[in-house]
Amino acid sequence: MKKTLFFSAAFLIVWLSLLPFLWFLATSLKTEVEITAIPPVLLPSATLHFYRTSIEQYDLLHYAKNSVIVAGLTTCITLSVSLFAGYALARLRLRAKGLILGCLLMVSMFPQISIAGPVWRILQSLGWLNSYQGLILPYVTLTLPLGIWIVASFFRELPAELEDAARVDGCGHLQTLFRVMLPLAAPGIFTAAILIFIYAWNEFLFALLIMTQQDYQTLPVGIALFQGQYTLPWGEIAAASTIATVPLVILVFFFQKRIIRGLSAGAIKG
Amino acid sequence: MHGQPVRLRVVRLSLLTRERVFAAALLFPGLLLVVIFAFYPILYSFYLSLHRIILGLPGLGQPFVGLRNYADLLHDRIALHALANTLLFVLSSTLLEVMFGLCIALVMNRHFRGRGFLRASILVPWAIPTVVSSQMWRFIFHDKYGLLNFILFGPDISRYQAWLAAPSIAFAAIVTADVWKTSSFAALLILAGLQTIPDDLYEAARIDGASAWQQFRKITLPLVRPALLVALLFRTMDAFRVFDLVFVMTQGGPADSTNVLQFYGYKKIFAEGLMGYGSTVSVLVFLVTFVTAMVYLRLLGKGMFGNPA
Image (cartoon, rainbow over all chains, first blue to last red; front, side, top):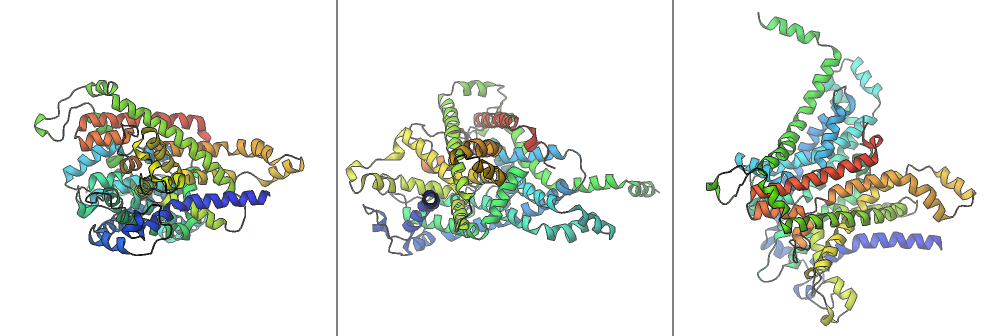
């Protein structure tokens, strides 16, 4: 009895989590007639029609390319910057450590609108609106707290003896970091990479403000702004949404343990 | 002649000083970015809020108007409405999220077959881009082809409702979409708290004949309280930032019923070009979240965040 209750709760949770997305996935595989049918068609005829039209008429691949570039570069840059900063905060003697960590925590909680106007003006004066670096730099800034906190929490767990041994063997600070600590903290760095990538891939507000030309817009902006002639192009929106979501779902199913660990490291252990 | 004493000095730096210099160098790139793209913009927002700046009319210049924008804000009915909406949204969504999060965490904390699948499934809503989940829910609430209408009324089209056109339902729809997307994040934070409760406590309680409900009330709930507060803190700060949902699902309507401060600020600055007045809204959002964060950190006490190293 108790077991039945438990399993039905688990089943309900899984079902409610996946159903809305599965419904949209099904929508993307329907035909125009099936989408507007009442009652709704539960099983689509599995046509790729809307994938083709969203690529041909809405330039879907172009948005996807921009998303890959922006999210990919953001991940690389944030990681390398947080690697250094995280190491310094976790392993080195340093004044004002608490203050720096507190400031980073604060940055991660800023409402974006409170910096959006000025960031837009800075980028405008640099001529960086509608450029990759114009979006990547704010993204790096906004993902840094996450990156640094996770990387630092992994560095902190490594035993100090390793570092001491490296020093005794004559390694300088940089060598210790790259030869000894970095390989050991690799799982943490990988975890941070996943979370940073997901953040940059999903971000919408800054992408909307900074990329005003279609040539540079990322997937979320495209998906939010798709317009049909008379009605909303639901089929194309669903197809583009699926393209934007599938990489993340794959990440989640492969790396759920890492993601869970990273999220709670970033939030609780701190 | 000149180089010699300097070089000598470098050599004389103590190990500790050298370590500090090295650490500062490592931190420099990150802190530089944070200063340029986060802290300076906050101050700049405040500066802008004291001026009248209209993007479409550069000829007007940027006259200093003192606190005029703030006085206007106090009499701006839409802004006050947006503030009330934001607070209501934050309160209702975070409470629901922590509640559902606790339920999900309790289920996830058990050992059973298929636990990995359950964990991955609940991460899906968290990972989906908010824009995508907003479009998804907008479609579910659609007046003709939406799943909700069909579930409620079957094929009886005459009873179908345009949910997002009704003010209070549109608001509830946004809360629903947010709760669906982020309860799992709350669950993960709460789960981390649940896992720190030692099994012996439950065993002892069972031996003493405590019922499952009593165990929950007397052991689980008090011990998971700090984790609940952390989840509440993170969800609250994030809920203040609601934007994508509103932009995609309702554009703040109908009748400003889903207009929230972030969206209002965006509209003032970027749609209407009122950089000065819009910045006043940004400053308000910042202050509200800042004060809320401070209150939470007080509640949590220093032990939680004070000494991370």
